Image 1 (cartoon, rainbow, N blue to C red):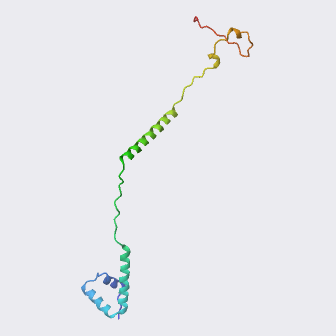
Image 2: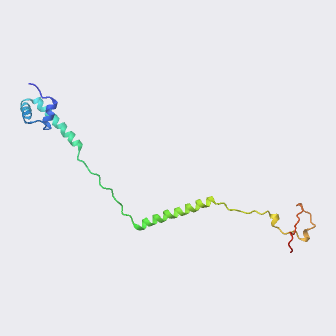
Length: 134
């Protein structure tokens, strides 16, 4: 007796055969123990493959957190405060403070008459009156 090939058994297990071919395979399976055993193995394999596929699942929609208005306002205020501090600091970096340094000997008054005869290591400083009367 000629045994059925794997393709014929698979088509039978998946019920893809037409009526006449299906009846022919069914008659053969009634009399052939080997083909029945191979058909049962194919059906078991189909069940394993079918169960591995599983059911399609949908992802749940994302959860939207309800935010407290006060917390949101505090966050915005904190961001603004940081921006102001950073902006002020950056503005100060670009500015230089102009300092006028005047030598101390220019700012002093003429020596008093009591010290006029005293010895001094400094050079003589002459104070001139630029035409203005005191």
